[in-house]
Length: 289
Image 1 (tube, rainbow, N blue to C red):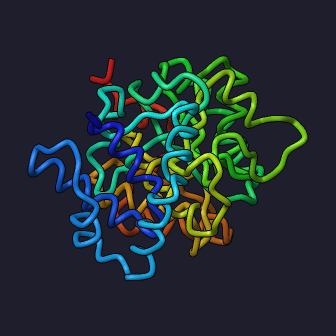
Image 2: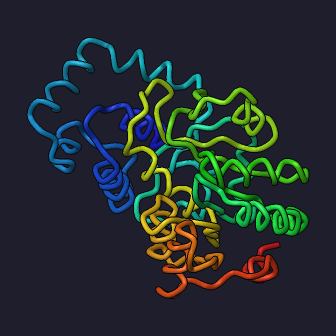
Image 3: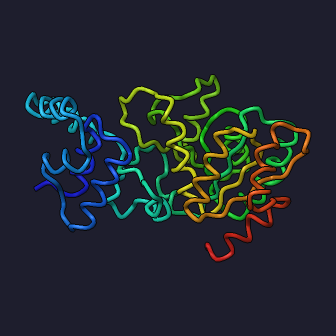
């Protein structure tokens, strides 16, 4: 008999079902206390087009879906039905059905702080991270970021340089590095920390994956820190998601003349906590150990 975990993995393979549709399926299972749904129930609940329904039926009849399903079991994956699924992430509006990973998955259930910011990290932002990261590592906080250039990679590198633990939530599949790096940073994180992705191992990259992964970055952490950000920035998406999920949002104030502080300063005006010391971050985790 198919378990709820098996069913979620199977659902994840169905083409044409997005975040909202997958969440509706999870809610249905929770409300009805059932392990699975019929195909017709899925079609009705997710309001799939006739063409998409035909595509799914054809994949089932041909045996293609079963072959891919068996292939999926070769990868390290945790589902919403598993006890190992991170509790904080489970609480967000649309938690991913499945998390593919490389590295130490136990890190997701440690006290985590999300730190994101601009890709064009300035010397000011570099100094903030270089000064503060040792304090966070010393307090055994796990840093979470998105492995993008600039702030994200500085967070991961700085954490590991001080023998800390870091989680990279990526918008591609777990075994594909983006952007490409000669220094094998993604491989290093997978060996010393954790790489997380909600995307199928063979799924091609897409622009919408990167804003989608931001909800996971914010969802894993009790507090989200924005180091630097332009007025329109992906980091502000992460901050707004964190606010929507009633998480703590902190922003590093910067020079009013700097475009890369325009976003963080605006967050502070809107109610984010002005962050001027790592002690403020640690205070949010005083009962976490």
